[in-house]
Length: 529
Picture 1 (cartoon, rainbow, N blue to C red):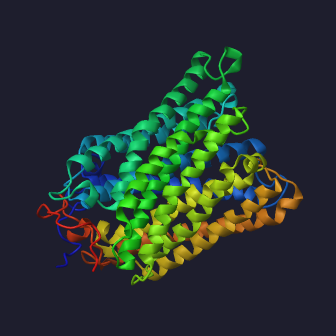
Picture 2 (cartoon, rainbow, N blue to C red; picture 1 turned 135 degrees about the vertical axis):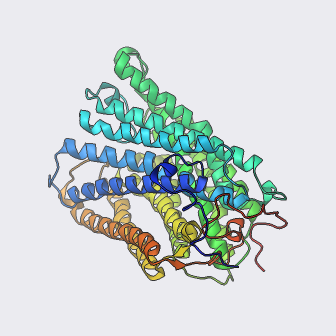
Picture 3 (cartoon, rainbow, N blue to C red; picture 1 turned 90 degrees about the vertical axis):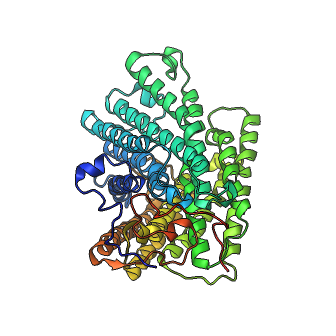
């Protein structure tokens, strides 16, 4: 039975801005994350377009080297800490997780709202650094440059990332408690949807890895303000120690970005293949395996830092090991599509785009894990292309696919499918046109982080800049699709995709407490016949 989108639901349960700012409803908090993350995606994207505009031709075009460094820093920090890390867990995770497991809300609703406010406070601190000299260290805040830098902008930017980290930790704690304590009657851990497995594995990383970054950034602030020798060699510190601490968090952070994305892809592929997911347990436990292995691979970022040959060899082998559970997922997704009744709707196009882009990102990661190859490619544009294929291409593809997949459930309306498909065309083609030439540039030796380059690199950089414009058009199309659907109000029905997970058994949008009656689970999450 279909329910009208005009019925009593979480959107019009209480009206007014104050009701949203004080809400404890996970669905509203998820949408507030969506607005926040969308805003910072726009800002980070503008910085990216400006960087590519400067790099379109050799020589200084529009910005000085100092201004370029600042734009690069803000682009990286905004996209990593305010968009990609919170993007899927905080937005889609908040909205979907309780619905997925038949719960009324998350375990700690007030903590959930506090997490959103912490992200806002962290973002405000980071942005305020613009008015006290700015930050130009790059998003990694490497010492000794960041510890010796004279402006207060670096301190504020570092504090912003420190505060935003608490948002990530609290969200992870909330999700772990919710999964363990609030599952619907009859739902075991082997019955939870694969998106929940992705969020659960991510939550473990958020809780265990993020405090290491927080301590590191706090030590950096103390060194800058109190002159305590931690990383500054002149004060008795060790700048390489910062890299060890930073990458101990930041490589697991890659999987904080990508594990939820993999969960989204599992949901989309099984729904649009009209087929039970192939290898449920293998996909579920591979998420936990990726999370566990990710804690032991940080040293592959430091092959040229002077660490021992034995350490480099160990980190190289462990890094390649991550490819095993990742490949398990990819093969099982393809096996799910095999002989399925595939519907090439826009969410499925984004899922297929994810498979293509993330496979390239993963394979090039194996190249960089190989010590001899990394010596040549280290700090070149090959690395830039690799991590954009993994972090941006993979995560953004999944985020866009997830938005379109759960859009009817969030709002009760259907969007313009043709325009949604066109957005995929622009983003998919534009992404590959932007970043694939950078693999070639890196192989040719073009260093990253430079605002100028020799004329031999000009043609590939021009192609890369053209591609960035296509990505921008595609993202603007997604934004238009979202608002056009809300304006046209095409009632979607409760389950327009014919999916089998619990969120599709309640009305669209869901009622304030998610379900009219508490669901009882008697079968697995993907029981297609």
